[in-house]
Length: 267
Image (cartoon, rainbow, N blue to C red; front, top):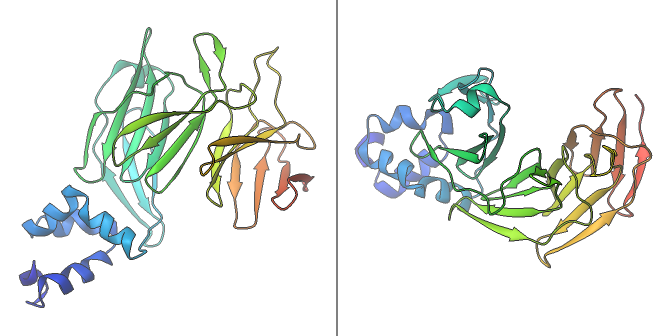
């Protein structure tokens, strides 16, 4: 690797390459075997994390099996391999979750579920580890190497289940259940805690207007009182507040963290 950057030594060469945009990694790896080994082993990403280097990347699937990545800082699109042609991903909806150096894609066959895992390290798709309880239409979010999925629907209807995924170990751990069963909900992390908002309950498609907060340190859920009006839609985050947007009328609801109250914003 030292020859790659003018013989400056391995340690300094790695320090320079840590700051290289991730979307260029495989271009460089093609001309240097030791750098290629660092990428595939995951050590490069661990070193980046240790020194606080982070990049924002967007991954999207606009066609049935095809995915692309976008580097917003450099305004650059880059391709990733297509998913394997598994029938359930070609004929039905799929759900996805980016965590650590992986993308997980969840699908449902007629009698079972399937998970595919894309690895940034190997630039390839493999079969992923199944959750302890299979379900879909859940809320999910990731924080570094960890992700949480909660709620959703199983064979018996909406669920209050939750599970934690460790992308380093590729394992699922069952968490305590939420207070309310819900499907089609939204999830996000804020200040080291996981939140689930909205969704539909088990009774008569009731739209839930409450949220729940999961504290990873003490492993418990806390119910956040009802929003000013029930909203079943997406969520967005800024550093001070959480903003939740309705799916039909563009209504914003702001949750003030200091006293867990909701304020309706302008349409």
